[in-house]
Length: 508
Image (cartoon, rainbow, N blue to C red):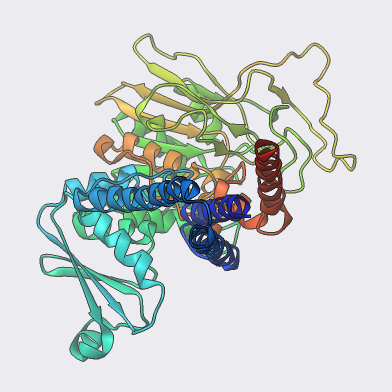
């Protein structure tokens, strides 16, 4: 009985603790397992003590006492190791995707602070959210020039009026005389806030409008308001530019973004764009299949040709209601600053993409394919996207699979300094629907940083984590949340059953 209770207690405690660590939060599943596990271990200890007291054979008492003493020493040792690690500030993060580690971008901006940063957490008594927020702020303060203050709102009414605190669990980030309020202090929100404080000298990025491009003011899934916010957060000043009416690109442009124009641009606009690139401009272009706006021919003039048709990649399954292959999930990257930090386990997602082919227009041009499909992909000039069978389409006759280019970069020198060009074969990757999926935001913003020669800002940004993380394949946190019922109980019960059988055979 003692062995069975000990076995059940250890397994229940293990499942409860590991689940809480992986999810970063408690739940009914975690709490019940901690209670059951602790109760079983206490019961086993009590039974062991009673057996020792009732034993009529003194020879048995010594082994039982040694076993009990060993258990106590093991628990004391575990507590001691935990305390020593806390005292020495040694930390381990075994969670999926490093949930308790700061992202590379956050660490980078904290290391480069121009002056001390103060993070003040304001809370109402009894708010359970402040624990995780406080731990996050303390992690930011480790080995960085950051001060963390935790203040109860009722005890600081002047701060409540000064900063416009609207709710508990709000953080005020102060850098010198500048400050900003973060109402929902996730790592991503704090990163954006701190970036805005650090990068006060914003660089102007013009985004073309007026020819059916993506709308940076729309907040629905098809809009690009998320890209607008990301640009502002990372030190840029986005401004609209009616390219169809422009005779030239403004001279203060740090870069020009074109989000897949749907209508044909006039010759004057294309001439202005060509002159801008030839003078050493920075151009980040997004193109879509089955569209001829004029920028496609201009990109081909500089050596990056958007091919007609859709990419079909059999390695990508059915996504968002489309048949398999229509929405490539890329995990193959060439080594380049644009793809820094992206690996085979950090995928990017494209919806209805157009292939890009490269050919040097001049010998000194430097062109590079940086994001690729799998080696099984092909180009379908006229795919049936309304395929009711949801089957993978067959490749056209005589067409074999090969790696297709999804994103290409180029450095071309014409009349002025070398220009930098980045071309995406899909504009949906930057839309509100897909920007925060997988590592799309990192790829898009890193491309803009490279184009504007801000390579020190290239990094992997913090992810939301937990239920908010949009990830494919499904992350461990979401898997555990989905398996709170039968999913986790089945392996747990099998493990307990196997342990009980082993104990029975050992006793026999």
